Length: 93
Image (cartoon, rainbow, N blue to C red):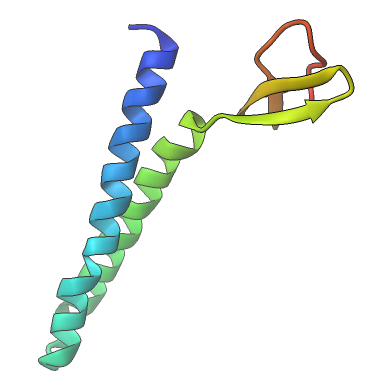
């Protein structure tokens, strides 16, 4: 499978994971309402780990447009920073 296809699939799965993490607030609120806070830390950690995993999948899949010295180019986040996808533009925006 091509890298852009995997990036899109990871982005969609990441959105689902972030939605799941946010929806875990409902059981946490229910635990607080019924004063059963013993399981609250478990829900909190599970929600946090799920949110971070979703965020790790969403961030590399994002695309944005930036303006560099040579005009407008499409950039992607990388481990180093923002780099231009198009080879005719500067390597860093």
